[in-house]
Image (cartoon, rainbow, N blue to C red; front, top):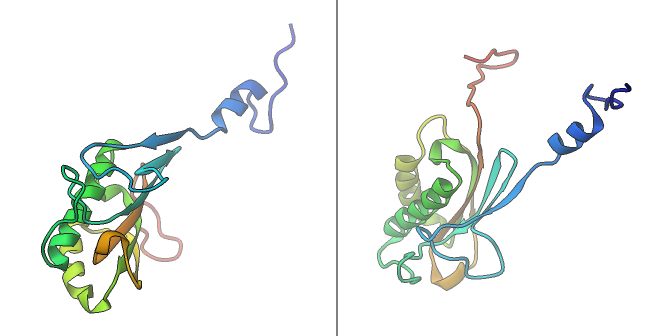
Amino acid sequence: MNSPTPSRWGVPWQVAALSDCAMKTILSTRAAPEAIGPYSQAIRADRWVFLSGQIPLDPATGQLVSGDVSAQTERVLQNLSAVLAAANCDPSDVVRTTIYLVDLAHFAAVNDVYGRHFKAPHPARSTVQVAALPRGAQVEIDAVAFIGRTVRARGAGAKPR
């Protein structure tokens, strides 16, 4: 009896074909605002979760929350946390964020709220000023999460802890 021809990974082609195909899952939750356009709240592709930008919409009403940029940032991060939970993740799984601000003068206030939600090791991050955001929001944040183990490198040639 002939065994199946092995793939370059040393397993039968049928198994290799299945294991090489990353699953793509559309994620959504009612605990965060519904998408206000033709996009998903998040997509999980294998062990990666790509979260669409969140603005400070109240998920119950779909309306922009009232208050200053700190209150808006708090709502944005609550929305992101809800979408992360739908992926069985939490903020500690986030590896990258981008913050969009209509006024960089708000950087310190946003940073203060952000620091309460993301603990060390902090995700990589960019912050950019934009001309405007949907619905008159002052802040929007998107994120990428990785479902896996966190290892802190200590420089070139560092070994996992």
